[in-house]
Length: 359
Image (cartoon, rainbow, N blue to C red; front, side):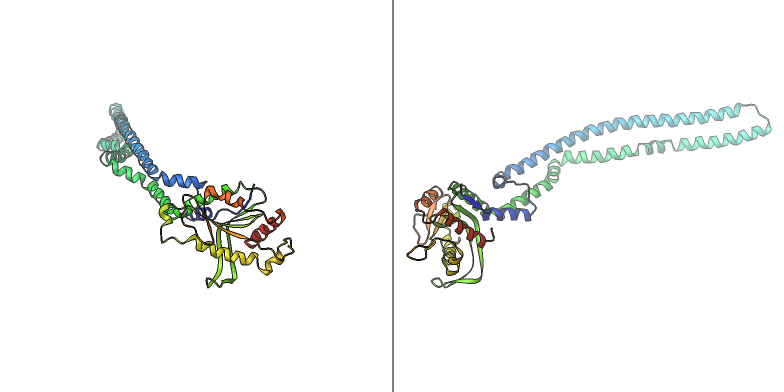
C-alpha cells in the first residue's frame, strides 16, 4: 500500500475553522456534511421538541394548580381550626378563674389574669384572619406564579415555544453560518479524500505527501512568466518509480468549470511544477540525492502535472497539465514505466519530506 504523509489541506482548514469557533462535536467530514444537509430538519425538530415540552409544562402546571387549590383549602381549614381551638382554651381559662372561690387578694390577682386573658382573646380574634392568610401566604404566592405562567402558556403558546427554542436555534444557526463560510473547503476535502483513497491502493514503492507546501527565503525566478515564486502549495505530491506527480484536486460542478471568477488550477500547478523542477533538478539538490549515475550524464527527475476533477472535466486539453477524472487517475499513473529503483524513489521522497519539515 502507498505510504501517505500529512492530512489533506482542505480537511485541515475545515477542522481549524470549526475549532476556532468552538464547534467540536463533529468527528468526521461526513458528520459536517450531514449536519449541513439536514439543517432544516434539525431546526424543525428543535421546535417540535419544545412544543411538546411546553405542552407538558402546561399540563403539569394545571395539575399543580389544582393540587395547590386543594392544599390551600385544607391548610386554611386546619389553621383556622387550630387558632379557634386556642381561643376556646383561653376562654375556658377565663371561665375557670371567674368561678374559683378565693379571698380578696386572690380575687384581685385573678381579676388581673382575667383581664390579660380577655385582652389576648380579643387580640387573637382580631388577628385571626391575618394569621390564617399569613400561614398560607407561600402557597398563595406559589399558586399565583404558577397560574400566571399557565395563563401565559395557554394564551401565548407560540411565543412560549419561540422563547424556549431561542438558545438552541441561535446555536444551530451559528453552526450553519460557520460551516457555510467554509463550504468550498468542505467539498474540496471530499474530493481530496477520494483522491487519497484512490492513491492508497498503489504499491509500497509509492509515496504520497498531502498538502505539500514550501516557502523560499530567496524567491525562484521564472523568466518565461516573469514571476518571482516565493511559495508553492499543491494538494498532493506522489513520488513514484516513474517520477513525481503533482496532483491538484477540484470537486467542481459543471457550472464551476465555466465560472470565470474561479482561479485557474492550470496556472497554480504550473508555478508549483516550475519551482519543484528547479529544486529537484538543480545542482545543489543533485549532490544531496543519492541517485545512480547514468553513463550519459545526470538523470532528470521528471515531473508530471495532473488536475483531477471529481465530477466532470472540460472537453478541452491544456498545455503543461493532464486533466483527468477520478477513475482515470490510477490508469494514467501506472501507464509510465519505472525509471528509478525502489531505493531511489524512497530517496526522492525522503528529500521532499525533509524540505516540507517532515522526517
